[in-house]
Image (cartoon, rainbow, N blue to C red; front, side, top):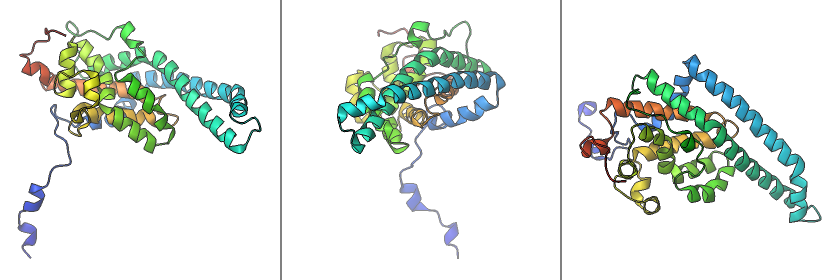
Length: 279
């Protein structure tokens, strides 16, 4: 009868499934929290709604145009007799082509808005230091070549499998996706690329080296946890590439705000608080 009062020594010896958080909160929560954050602030959701509507319309037009002009020619190219399987392969090709075309156009159209949402959110949180921080440059906004770009291109077709494929793609690219989104914060505080790598990977590794290092995919890597949820949301059909890149920019700002409240990046604290180091 006293069993419920006995200490559970077994559970104490079991490893925790909850990753440690350096900055106070588990980063996997920020993309979820950002949705409610945007919905509760008219100044943010009006921006998200306007840009999402434009993006959704653009995506639909591209899909209709490709189905109308490219489906049959591709099916005939695959099989002149237009067998049923040729139509199936052609449909998959059109979907892939549509996803690539839409993705490229949305990246260009959304990037500047993402920076605007990021800065606005940090201001709302009271963590944007006006005289010290700078918004990401327009040139950087329109940069289509993301970190680990080749790996993302090679693994992109996995996302054609709804949900499961997106989860796999997100897991593979998680750390680099998280880094891409937090790059706005790193640029804002003028963090040198060497310290960025130390912060994200735990050591000064090149992108290529990090791809093959197990620590890059460690569940305790906060940028991997953040990047996985960001990437998974963006892989969801229909709304993924239209809505979530915008809310995820807000998520990055919430993450950055907590970093500021915690006293700054751990790599800077270890470096004596200075960002002036060789890149």
